[in-house]
Each structure stands twice: as C-alpha cells, then as structure tokens.
Image 1 (cartoon, helix red, strand yellow):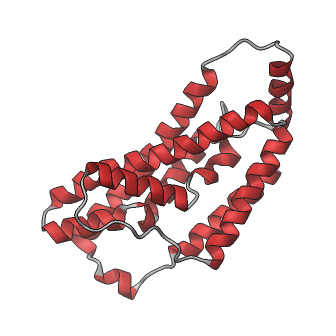
Image 2 (cartoon, one colour; image 1 turned 135 degrees about the vertical axis):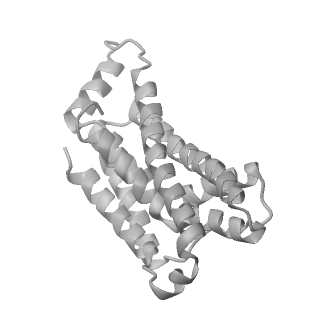
Length: 217
C-alpha cells in the first residue's frame, strides 16, 4: 500500500462514498429538517461516519484473515468475483436497501444503520483493488509465512487502520459538505427536479472495482 496511488485513491473513493445519499447525507438532512435544527445534521454525521468506518474495517479484517490461508492470486480472484457478483446484483436490484429504522434515532441507532447500509451496499468491497497486495508480493508473503520465515508484524494492522482513517476522512468531508449545502442552500426540492440515479452509478462503480481487482497490478 506504500505507493503514490493508493492513499490518494482511498481518499477520493471516500469522497465518492460520501457523495452517495444512501451512505447517510440524505438521512442527516432529513433529521435536520424534521427537528428544524442545523445541529441535528451535525449530530448525525459523526455516527454515520463511524458506522461506515466499521463496515470498511470489517471487510479489511476479513480480507486479512483470508490472506493467511489463501494463495494471493486466489484471494484476488475471490475478491474480484465477490465484487462483480455484488455489482451485478445492485445493477438488477438498485432499490434493495435496509428499511428497518425510523426517524427517531440516537447515536447508536445511526451508527448501526450506517454500518448496515455500508455493508449492504458493498462499500468495503470497493477498496479491494487498492488494499490487496500485488500478486507476486502476496504470493511471496503467503509462502514465507507458511515456511516460518516471517516474524509477526504489526505493519499490516497499522496500514489497514490508516486506510480506514484516510477513506473515512474523504467520506466525512464530502458527506458533511453535501449535507450542509443541501440543508442550508439547495433544499430537497432539487432531488425531484435534477436527480441522478446514484444507485446505478454505485453499481457501475462496483463492477469497475471488480474489474480493477482482476486486472490492476
């Protein structure tokens, strides 16, 4: 992950996630309008970002554990297959969202809602092209680990936490900017007049991420 592309890409991908209303900014605006208080928008943003970060962290943790038992190339194929399958599902079922929560929510409810929404939309899967090590490097690590030539290291853990932090920073910055812009200046009316179907964009982004996982590096 220590290259000039990965970290800016993580930040930009976070911005893309923050732009998606399904990731939370629309819910934050709705809470602000319901309570007629800008502070309600701000109060919603932190737990939404936290839930998103936890979802991303879970995916990275699972990928890290899978990397201990799977060959690097196999792990890349499995990851790409999962992203492409999920992208195809979102393309065919763009309206499939969790619908369990009402408008009376606290910090814990918002965190859990955001975690479920991010996980259900495959937000963490989009990071796989960036966080999976290059094929040759992954194979070398895999074989070295099994032959006992590697000492335990905390470097991957810190790199994973850093990836989550950078991605969440980009997501939070864009999400907060859009939420405050819509709440204070634009209003929700524009959603009925100039709406872009971001569910389709999201599905296309998943398919692009799956393709990149197969082809990149």
